[in-house]
Length: 438
Image (cartoon, rainbow, N blue to C red; front, side, top):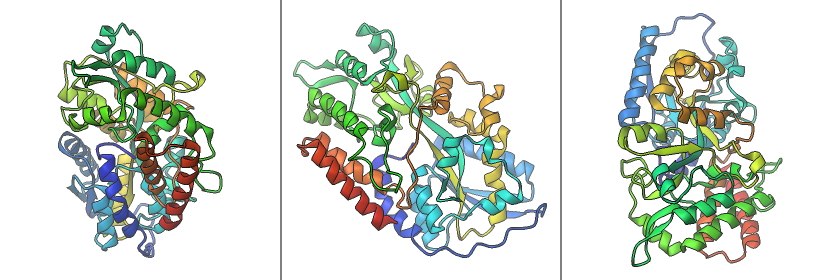
């Protein structure tokens, strides 16, 4: 799952995604001959809004300058649900930009997005310029139906002023240290309610998705044969036990009451930006939000703490993905736009600078024009760290993660008494939805 769309909205869109993506794929047209002139109008739908939508417009204008015979029309604020419904109805955009790598398996297997291999081969695009992680989450079962549009690396933000008040001088590096810090940083009101929370451990709070925390313990989602691994990989039990112990220390009801008074994740009332939460899991794009909304906030960034100190430095890597709808009216122009946005190093660098997302080509990562400050460089280091990982693609899209998320909500609230039995049941539920989704 990815940024700027709440996990609740993401889950609500899945039914529509599955229904639309399961429609029969149309036969793909033969690509134009090499060197053929491309012209006409191409329609781009993306999910960005406000400041970020303006950034997209700037780079699209650069594209139109380089390709004067192609005109791009843009529809911003289009989430995955709207895009997939349009594709299912036969009037999808030429180019769709998604916030979720988790849809790629579904889109590739169903044909909702066309196979890009024919364009890549014709234009001799060197995919080795993309790192292994971004290559892995933009294809499924040997079919590449997407290209990476920048990337996200998840780390930890911490409030330096609150750290100083608690006598803490450096960020925690292990989960045990995170628990210790969370307790030291927590402040209660006179009536015992929570005033400031050191770390809010609820899985459904902001970016605390299981996917984002899995690299902290090296947990795996799927077995080699594509079945659920949450019941057999002991790393999940390590993560869930650690989290539940911290939830119980705070009290689940106390955390729920505290969270009810917190602001929207992407507004200036973000709980971390307001100093209500001292340590928060988030991605590099938060840097731009802080600069725009909370200029006086004194904070630091670091990798997410791990259960094994030897694995410290990695994190969850994901990103936005872009593809051509199966009913695109101008697929050749669509491909030219996609190729420009994802493989033109200068375009990637400009987008990275404007959106504060991780660039995805080898040259752009090393280019001094990126002007990465120390905080942004921390996330680039997480992105390139060998201990970083992403969620595996599945023909059922994000269904396996959503099924696990439902179990996690029950577990953290205390409804699941036996963790081993609960994980075994979660395996069954995940395998069931993956079968239905595929």
